[in-house]
Image (cartoon, rainbow, N blue to C red; front, side, top):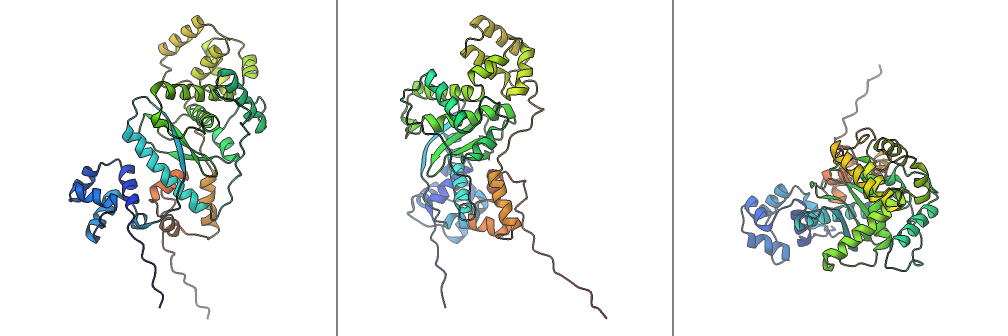
Length: 377
């Protein structure tokens, strides 16, 4: 008789699940009805929860039991660049970071079954930092050349990134202060795009912004030790890259035949970039002076276009497809069923469906109905 190997409680998983749910040690302890010292000891690996306490943890955090006993592959996660509001809290960023670990577990699982597109980034070793505006314009042109885009508009940044081997995840950040973030990972970078602000044009810029971080800031190990001014500079550089990448200087300038607000609405249809971003690009390229820029900004405010521009509710949000296709391929080819995917990934169903951009309920498992046949007489 062969005994199954018994998996030990993994204290790291408890901390991850707690932070993903946005709970402090005390809040989790109060919900379960134990002391915060007990939770702290579990997370430090000093004690193991008894079965009754374990059930309380599972029911409160709503994670499968297997998650807390799983030894996932070690993940190398480089610096995480958050495209976030300055008021985004440490707690909010910590929550998103720990959610990103779940994305890594899902990706690692799928790599055993799926061959993803190869990573296809240009060699940037020829560029000597620091990144000034001229250098940023050059690297944006180089990426366009490397990916064969030429001067054409980019209509779907998400599919462009996925085709070139960057893993893109949709993410409910549960925060209006974190739009997107990226991470350097072993093998290929990850980009997380927030679902909370449903704007195709914002997503275009967010995706290009994160690509800028991936290309220009790979050598930064820890953003936490940087000063506010240094972080502000990194964000400016990523914004400048996004602007140059989405709106190539010469081609864009040729299309700006008027600086009226109505003309920028028409240009938005062509370039798939927000009106505000195009106006700022005009200022960067000296197509308009400071006075005209200020006048256009006033018009935007008067027409209440800060939060919602014309066409924002017309163009559908670009969604990742690579992970969705991967999961559906396993299901459709009967390699795995829904229950197996959840049990083997050991990640809550809601997060598998969210990160893989699956419809809610896709992984609901229904037992096959019994088969009956007519008796031939």
